[in-house]
Image 1: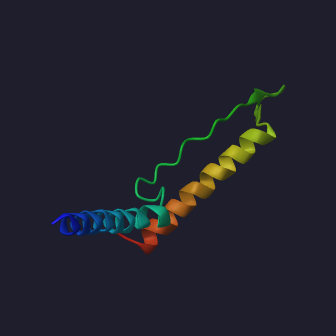
Image 2: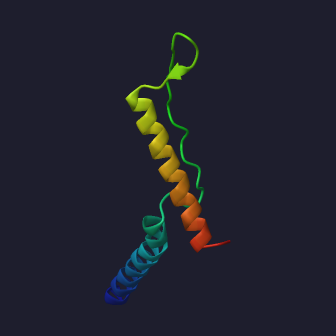
Length: 82
């Protein structure tokens, strides 16, 4: 009697682990593409004499990373519509 209960418990735990692993796999493969809302970049700028603005290097890098994230999102949704 006790052996059957142990076997059922082991089977139940094993099944739960397999189901959990199967459901977490797609999230690992496509982490941020479901919502596809990259965080807006932190930008800072300075006014330049004579008009115009100057973006420091860090702001330029943040903007480039944001654009890359948007492009990745667009590419993903074009390859996987719906």
